[in-house]
Image 1 (tube, one colour):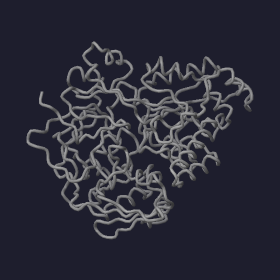
Image 2 (spheres, helix red, strand yellow):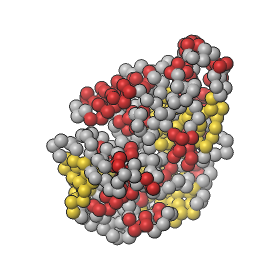
Image 3 (cartoon, rainbow, N blue to C red):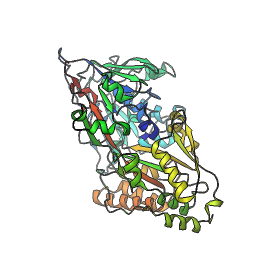
Image 4 (tube, rainbow, N blue to C red):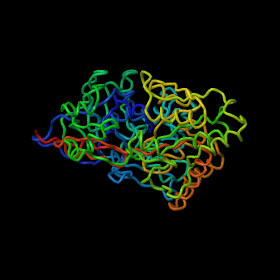
Length: 529
């Protein structure tokens, strides 16, 4: 999913994503459990699962809605509303068996037809989803609905109230994982029909309900007592929107969890200080990079892309700007991701070679380059520290001046492909732990998230072969070959892989980050204090 780096690093940042649980047959919390968890947040851009495509909105969407499957504790697809499923011998047809008695927040039972409706709505052109093609596009008939040539997805059949049959275009090991993404969540048809702003009063199926939303002030989730899984121990969760600097709010007890950013890392990691025992550090399966508009000058020239890549001293940025809170990236796949290639050959920091590449380009000299602008997300003109450092290095090492153009996050996150200038900076957080979610989703020529419109036929072919290869080792080998070519082509500039640094109050229990930086909020409880 998309993650704008400005939103990640500015002082107005929201806290880590929180994910609802998947277990079926949970019990109601005891009378002694409850309480309110206080978190920092910013307003969601949307609460419509078919539209949501970035971390700001996902933070809330995953609490309010759910789907057939979810990611379990091992980050593999696990039962959710579907209690089980069968896969045909050819690997193309999935038959899902829904749990009976699962209800929307208003008590109406969820049926297989509700999923068919939700997916067809997500794919309908009028909905305007930028995620449907990516996460539902393997299903037969989705392309026709997306193109406005059909109203129904031919590969989705309702066999009875609790049985849904789904046929995909080829056997793919990651298909189930795609269905854990919000685009595949179920929505209530009557709720949607109530009007364009229906998602401000959502009738979902998740572990929490939306109780209150005061824009720019407060968003309150309350426990869904009808939840089919493990009913939340908390009575409610209050997100204090745009409330100030998280560290200050945490110190004064106004919030119970806080992200730790560079300005406060010394205070948080001081073993003699008050916060050291409350600090949690966990890797995040994420990738932050600078993308090129490969369709337009000057970065349609591989020499220019490689030159700009080799003129950045990433080690200095990781050390001085990020204080070693992130890990340098030379490739696309983060460490810990299946298929990670520890032998990948990146583009080294080499100013002399960078200048030679510019001399060998069709421009011959930086004096002949057209104006170059980098698109970033944010408000009020505030640019991230690492972006300032990178622009400074280009100026010092290459003699090139790069202008920064800032877009408001809603525009940037949902219209980057159309809005980008010569370069852009963005982050990508894993939706599921599979190389396809990074390499194909971000760099295949037909992918909606290939913002730079990079197109290498050899890479496209490798990615397609890897996706349908059922031998796991061979599949990963093909992905690694594709990744090396993407890096060699300088399709983007890999910058760093993220980590999560958070503070959690001692009275908050089971607030545990997984490798995606997510927390199962319905498992969290508070000890009276």
